[in-house]
Image (tube, rainbow, N blue to C red; front, side):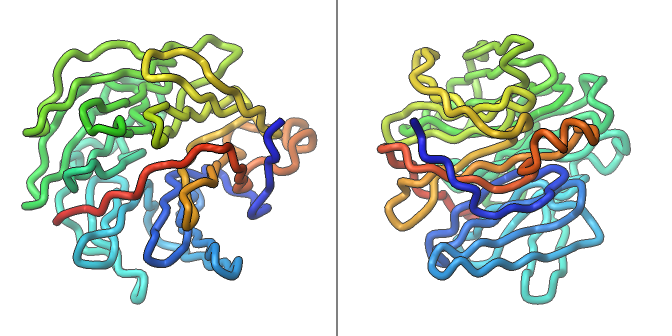
Length: 289
């Protein structure tokens, strides 16, 4: 049995995007709907929360210091000292029905982030790649809810979800950043819920969060189920390895789409969890721009 710990009991509407920042020995994560950013120090357990006028949907540390993030319409630099945003590029400013969702930086310092239809119905979402020179390229399209980009240990595969379609896709990633050979890596059934945020461990296995599926699953590179972590809440949104030894998996959750009866049955919905699994994660890449 996995020793699951509730690290931060909180009523996050849509906890997402856990980010390990090694230089601070701290974990950051967002609540997209409440427009909050949370920070948990793993040194002394100190907690801090920022509230913004706009939603941060994902974020990454930069090589030169500070952070870059995704907002509703695109990418921006974020200064946590002042709480101010500096827009970088807004590729979907002309699509008011869309918003950016999950994002992550690859081993070459490029920021990958997907968009979604805010109502979760139209195939209006896309996958974008932000370069070091701050130019942006659309890499794939026709997503309803783009989610969870992550990368194989050798950087040669991109995993990306369409949560609404219950599909986890895999792409071959070339050194120049181009994608080829899109295929379905895993398709979830109704009982398993919807694929959400993901991470890859040092053994090149994929850890997948199940929104509406009350679990996190570890898959081999061949798509075989290796381990299932049952969760005490239904909506499991994302996960990442953190800590000085990168041996603790942190898991975000959400209260979204839960009625009062369901919330009564799952009082920890929205909280941040952790567990040690006998496997280590990979270091957090920094955005090169």
